[in-house]
Length: 113
Length: 109
Image (cartoon, rainbow over all chains, first blue to last red):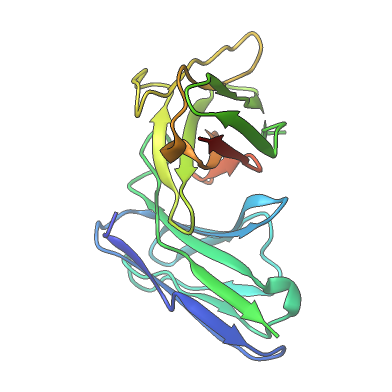
């Protein structure tokens, strides 16, 4: 599990600021995902990537941007943070689709004031 | 539509009592189902998957296609089982998991 890391672990920012959350994995997994975890909603998929330079929207993509220039990195950017984006963000990776185990990072707790 | 339903937000049991966390799914094909556990302020980790048919930490889960269920069971709950449990379905072309909203299990001494 230590093969997938997130930074920062905690972040406080203000409304309107741009924030980038980093995700790095050392397994060369093809698939990477960003989820947000909120009380009453569980985990919701924001964006995913099937490979470098291939990304697509999940369930709640509005207000977020991703890129994946390298297989091991999958940063998530909040272009103009809003209070509704206060959440815990989890990055995950998976070798391929289907039956492979999905591994999660430790999470980033983001507070937007 | 693909969906995972965990009807209980909170389940509270006493140590040594049996526990069952319910999970129902909606999926048109052959589902691949998982249970993930999240201990307090930690990352999610895989607990078990239905294709493995294994028992992890005393937990088991059986896929019932007729009832579209994948309930998680343990005969004797322990305090260290207190955590958030998520049922998940792998079935999309995206390769991602579809999660239920989770059930918080509290095991009292």
